[in-house]
Length: 273
Image 1 (tube, rainbow, N blue to C red):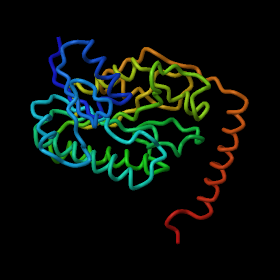
Image 2: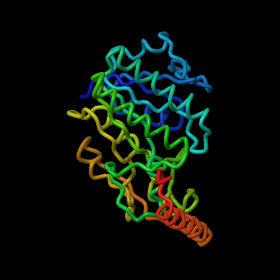
Image 3: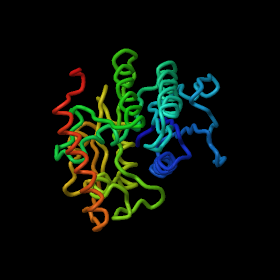
């Protein structure tokens, strides 16, 4: 049986709660939890990770893996919020992991790192050039690149998981999800999320990796073959997208704007003036 100590940041949020419950049910893990903990969940160390403090940093000592989920979850955040809660906070977590000898950091990155490809028709591998469109996506890309430095310069194994679309609660897929086909193609079931992050925390032989993390959804552009190969991810769920007429009209309008932006970029390339 696996015997690992795993620390979860953002432990009382949607993702942290699901993963913590999964690891405790699986057995073989000591689970440590850090969070601002607004709900006063028992067994959670209350910590403002945006401000480095040895009081919470010492929780990283003796940890096999840190699963870093703490961040502002909205893709609509402004730069000030992204700076404090997605950048400063993440750098503090990386510093604590390195200082106290954590074996690995698993970082909750995001599909928003590749949001610019929504209407491109490209196969989305993780070696494709990133294309974030907002402060949230850019902050997640910076978290990935800082993780590369963490692995190469400070000796802490690092895995970034570009998480798909995972809703609160039961997380059932369907047309109610935002972003039409694009959103449903990114669906990540609760059990596939938990299995993927567990595998990312314990898989052997990984120094640095950035991996897509979606369920096995038919027709999706996201490539999860590398995720299977590197950490042994074995998704059990998948969803065929269902799109309403209203969603299709909205999606077609957005696609026209995308194609116009591509044409403008060809006419006036960035950095050409």
